[in-house]
Length: 130
Image 1 (cartoon, rainbow, N blue to C red):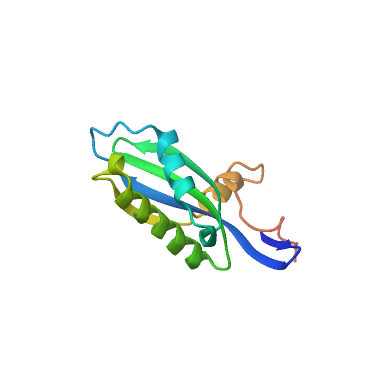
Image 2: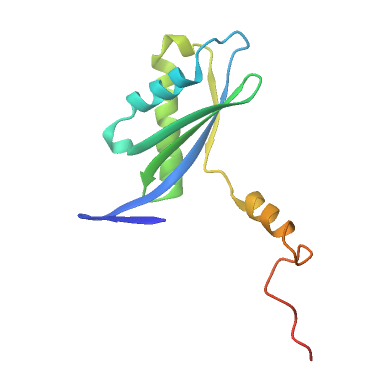
């Protein structure tokens, strides 16, 4: 989705997943992690929203929604923000950023197609007879 504002193009909205390794004894609530990232965002990072959820024991995923002109720019800015927060917040000592990437949506659409009434066929309708 490309957004247009009063002053012209403002970029596209990206969701960047920050995958974090969390120490086993970590007791920081998800809401606090989300808040630390949100309030640490600088204006040029153009962060619109932050969400966090436990992915697995010792693993946390933080979703950063931000505006950027390119996907790579969004990933780099979100990773930079995360590294800055991890370095500055004493309660996140020993936490580590594993990756910062825009999630692929292909599996979602493949699931939709495989549950359709046409036998899971991917593509246009029936073949025309010859």
